[in-house]
Image 1 (cartoon, rainbow, N blue to C red):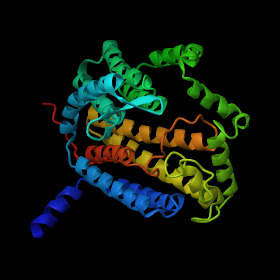
Image 2: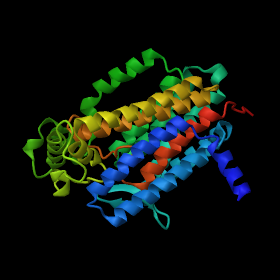
Image 3: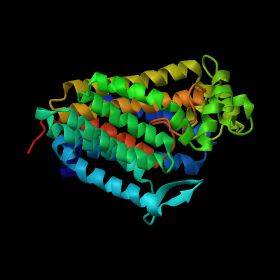
Image 4: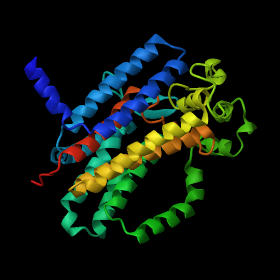
Length: 365
């Protein structure tokens, strides 16, 4: 027992107390909302508890991995992810018109792996070339980003592709991407919008059109937005109370334990609850940026800043989607939505933040 306690204390030594407290607070809110949204389903509640326990264990494990070891994982993990994405394109399972999964004895979605592998790869690459960074290095980094982005976009999985693109852009930006390149990219992207619109699938175009006028198809493509905005608006200032939301309890809100869990939360806890939740998310992001600012190495700064802004982007897109100000793209609310893979991936990121915060040296060998 003493030896077990010794190892446990050594493992917790690399856990950032502030970050852990904020994460556990959001997970506690998540458990309450999933309990309500699932109709107190024992299977859903127990599954969520298992997912949280596994994800927290992975976070603590990752916090104990020194950054110099994390940096070495980037290239092989990235290459494995690309190979698996090619495998999806050639042999992947088709579900609901999308080819996103590989059958490895279990359904595996390689795009989730790239959410971690891409920033690790780019951070390793820029750390390796820190002393001689030139325009060519940013071009190579952009190609590293573009390859998985296009493979995921082809599946099609617009939501994950956009998140991967944002992750890669953040890392390139913090690595020193020149402003003239950024502004040129924005101009090029704006000019290419008509071409992008023509390449979008019909259902993706409908999602954008529904954002402009969801009432044009209230029982079809516009149903999600209409019901979620009704739920959030009806919550008022302090909400209807836990498990008292009519929209959620009467099954009007679709996917209420996953992508649209914020609608359930808004109805039951109101604007006051929403402000509290947003403040918790902003506190996590702020803590991550403080860790990035204090990191002694380029690798640590890039990873910490990218992980932090990735979380902010996820939250912004999901809340905007559920509130009816952004198109529905199927992105869960971080740390709140039910789902094992997404939660483990997110807490892997939190573990990386803790590793950067508590390991002060990066071995460049």
